Image (cartoon, rainbow, N blue to C red; front, side, top):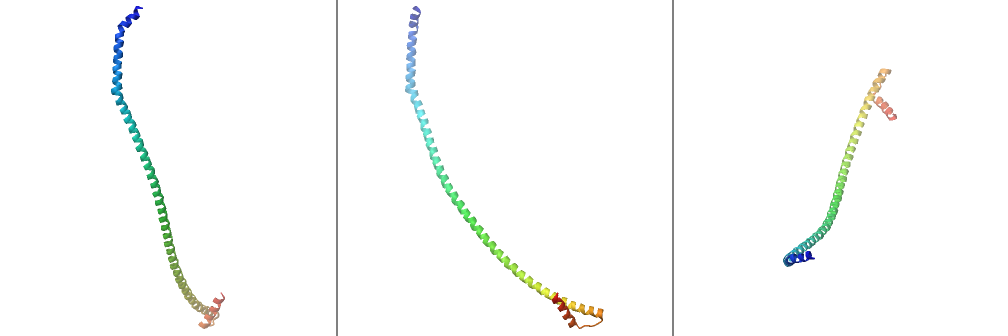
Length: 164
């Protein structure tokens, strides 16, 4: 077949030079570009590994700080509760003391007021007896026309007041 023979004669040199060119390009890439790409990939992998290690160290440190912070928080909470309880106890004691002082003062005032009331009642009763005895003497004098002595009127009023 002449067409195939013609193809081999025409394209044989082109195929040869194409293979030579591709070979040169292949070896050029393999010798120059591939090491650069591999170095870049290795560098990238190393950076990722370093970043992961740094992140792991930071996480461990954060956990440690969190544990320390939790311990400090518990200690602070316990101390605050103790102080609050002490303040409550102190306030309760102060309130109890104030109430005791106020109760004593009120009891003293009540005793004084009761004594004053008893004096006023006794004075009023004495005054009532004298007024009642004078009124009784006047009533007896007007009704019966008999004049009685103030001592007899006072005696009669006392007897009536004692019997109620």
